Image (cartoon, rainbow over all chains, first blue to last red; front, side, top):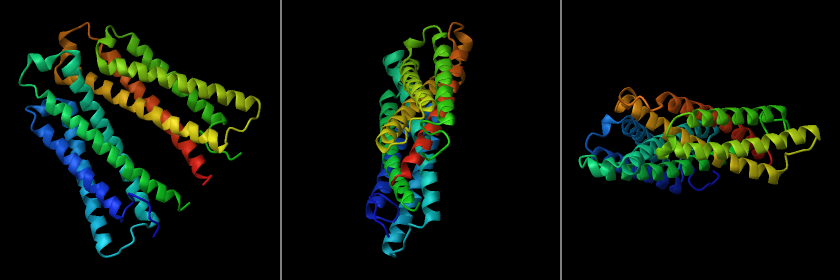
Length: 155
Length: 155
């Protein structure tokens, strides 16, 4: 089995997946602690996307742990193609959610200064959630490229 | 020279670049026709990103035309690496701009219904600009993957 850092079935790959879970959960927690987040489409969309991200990363982290314990090879072409394709799709969704929520948070904070006027608007939680979502996306992109790099070596 | 559809120095590649220019220009035109777009960070950011996209696509379209007229081979490893890397960076910027502006436009239209209340708010132009930016991103992604596919064949 070829060892590429961050690819499926390796210790670094599992660490990446677990980090994605932690950051996606933290981002979602920050979002849920903000009162009335679901009134805004961008934050509601981010919530949906983060749940998708969490489920995908958690599933693959479990698969990595199983493969490492049982010394199973996950580097088959079919498995890699499926993981890499879904990884890219999930990465695009997470990035779009992060951008969308960041832009609305910036709109509240700097464009119309709603945060100062309406004290019940949880601007800090919105901003924190967007930043954590961006970190999740970076980790997800690292996983995607690592898997893609390995897939390319089959051709 | 290997022929990959949409890669640098091919007719399809040049057509893709010119389409990117047309859609980026149309998106920017829609944005500039909206009164007070620069008051909002998301739309101002989209404007900057679209100018970057337009310059990059126009430059590469000219390079493609030059290469096709003079039968010059643009498929060297150095040239491809540079083009593909910058293509991916530009694609990420364009996508982030499109997501950011789409989320603010949706916020105006459906979350707080500002479009009905404030008639001077050019919601239609904002929405049109975001849609055209998404199409530009799709075309840019096609160019990036085509170049990347060709680059992979060198390894």
